Length: 426
Ligand code: MN
Image (cartoon, rainbow, N blue to C red; front, side, top):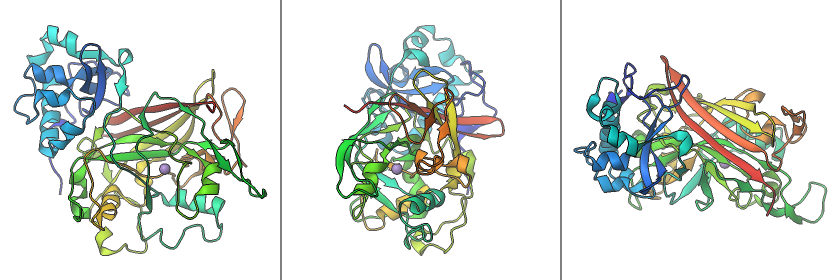
């Protein structure tokens, strides 16, 4: 089954200039929250390097009959807009696509409004796009789970017996999820070296990034109800890049028996633009073969994976950037529909604005691994930086940048960046 989404028409061009290799052609139309110089936080979209205030557009009647009241765009987060439902997101996205197409003068010739509602991306600050209520982090990359199993537990049987049957995950903490551009202090905590008898307290010496994507739910369910694999994608508003910072030394000492805790909640960083699942429709692809067959409630038909190129870059303080990993969202063993079906199979209810991390996305090749732990293989294979220094984990004042984009038939739909700098421990 495939649906026609007008805004995805690959022949569309915009009257806004779009730089080569931009993540934001007129076919993207993502949603975010802009700090407007006069109006405070407003909903926004982006075309090329232009950020567009949707509140001003709506107040001037350019979004009428889409089902969205103008005031829903004058909120500190997108949750109320998302709550209006999939038909409204689609109508607004289609309207924006129509307003900005090259041959439509309706908004193009309204110079007064353009001055008030359109900004260069370099001149504005983007804010956290959603209020995240609940946050789940999955562990859905076979390669990542295998690599971590080899390093942390058992090289002969790196996968636990449940892994190929359950989309393994844990409930994380939403308070420490921040938008790109925020710096994070190195965490302090308890660690114990493999040969030490007692733990010590101090700054983590193994701060790591995790290359992840996260989906944001757009539809509430009632406690007791489940979402089927077939319906799951109708509950997803869109995706962001997600850097789930981790402290490996704290993690290793604390994670048995109840799983990740303080090693994972000192800061996680998302990209500011939520790219809708609608915009990613052309990039559906098949995922890895699942062997053995999952239980019936996790079985699916068709293409439920998405071909999204992912990159990680590291910038040592004062030095040039270097790309240290290239992976792809399609490497995920469990897809988003299976994750959401599993999350709700017991009757757990979900809300608009919940965030679901994919888990670290490692590919089959060493250069596609999605964490320093794997790239430098537990400290045994240091990475050389542009300034000649080496890294096995993240140093103070290093900046980590995640990037992601899908590309097909000349159309590139991207996510921009999730950027964060690691500061010394407080
Ligand atoms: Mn994670």
